[in-house]
Image (cartoon, rainbow, N blue to C red):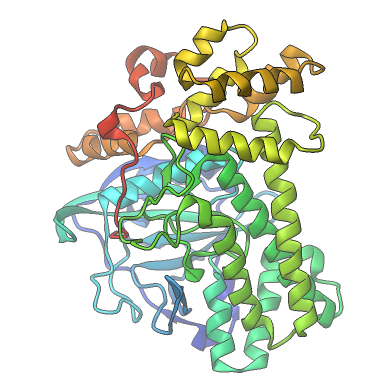
Length: 481
């Protein structure tokens, strides 16, 4: 039985504006993520899903609203933010009594639309629909999508595009920017109410702590979750592209997708957002920007915390990022027990990869076969150079005490065969734009088993598993949605 509510309405009324979505005209249901629906305890017929996703009807218990928040965008504070194209419909309550936010993107104009049309385009909707599933099955915390609709109604962005709407699922839609807005307002009671709300919804283990400790632990935990998340991004070769503080979730989930990308050739300073002319959100900068955003959040939390408590939270970010990153990369390199000097070996390896134009994901596939391949096979892939010959000998010496099968298995567990590269996402988008949704449906299934490609992927789309051609590599996208 469906259980819906909207407990965000229990917060002060100036935190949001109740508003109904503008229905999407001539909408067609592109996809319904039934696996996710079952996990959420949602049981709806396709016709009901279409009506809900197109904003044509609400299920009992859902009461849509637009949230107010602010944030730092490319380093500059913007006080005029809020849900400009999406509405928090409410929450689904699952069988374990956990609540999950349901957020309708492309819902039309809201009080925070800032002269925008409030609509989403099919291109960006498909990209978010796919990436949530991809990251989830790579064991990276993320929002996901429940359903996706497509309308032939035109909307202008950099070009004329089709409209779309989709329902995003998250532990919460509270962003760092919510606390920035409340700190700017300067009302301690409001700030405490939002902090208590986040504790209740996301971190219930802190509920019984005295207020002073509860808020300090809340900030520290958000810093830790953020650090651990970004460490997983780095190990997976994932670039978010637009890490503004209003795009950072207090739940430590990957949130608000725009011009994201998985690396093709390993380039440490890769920029996936062509609007990011200074490389603020380059792959190499993501850990530092995560810390910077936590510093901004800490400034907001100074309403409740001492400077010492804030520093403790930021220190925890650094410690937990380094631990999580080394653990993830150690596993990726087949080093189950990190030894002294391994962090330098990993760093030097990445520098050499950067200099050699090597596909990030295929490198680790070859690494898993290193002992079974002849030296010339390895050098055919990485390039026949003195540096790579020496690297191979160093690696084999380092791993000679590790069981070969254990090492191979460790690498395989961390190395996806099917990676949602940008050129693959674009092929799926173009299929959807023609009204053919079969490829998207297939891709959603493939993304659920990224480490073991199913037969239909191997037989019909084997080129998705190959390294991209030169013209397909390093595609940079814009923020437009």
